[in-house]
Length: 272
Image (cartoon, rainbow, N blue to C red):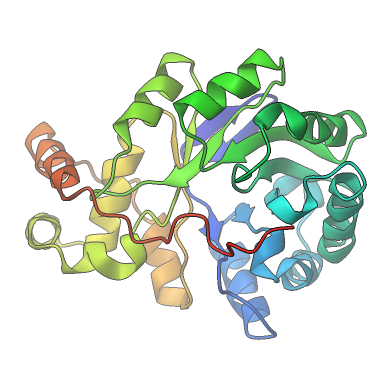
């Protein structure tokens, strides 16, 4: 497994996204993921599955330090009286004393970055998170964080062949900040792309494997695809025994002209 450096952490380049993976049916999927070899799990307060993730980690029998765990703070908790208590509530649900990576889930509609970003640093200082970062931040917002002298190590954004977000990814590469790519398979839309399907046929692979291999051959990218079956879990992680040619990489790169998101920007518009 390829590893990526996030501050003091070494994390797998492929993890498991858990958005909409809820209820008791989530636990067997997570346990399958652990058995297959997944060691990076991404969750969030918004996902309402931190309890299930924590239960699966406990039931896995794996040492806690082997699992790299991400959760994210929702904007309704960005006030001084709610931020740290919300993180502690997340840790209680996750049944752990810390997360490896704590992120701001979305920048706030009304608040400036400086009005809440220090609460994130405080969580790290209190030992609630080993490293900290943000999600869905643009260049101006990243610069605002850096001006506050808060040491974030990552930005988690939507990234797949249809949307490269080159402004923010180029800026992050210049500052040696890895990208965590959520929805890397475009919620299944990449499976229907003719270019990807053609390359998959050439390699006798599944389209999802072509997309993830394309991402793995880039520098400083972490992918967190969601999967709800054992076969898809296995396929998504089995992408380190073949290579795409420069021509094939270029063919997939050109798909960004679609510039199409598959995730609604800033869901849950009613914030406190």
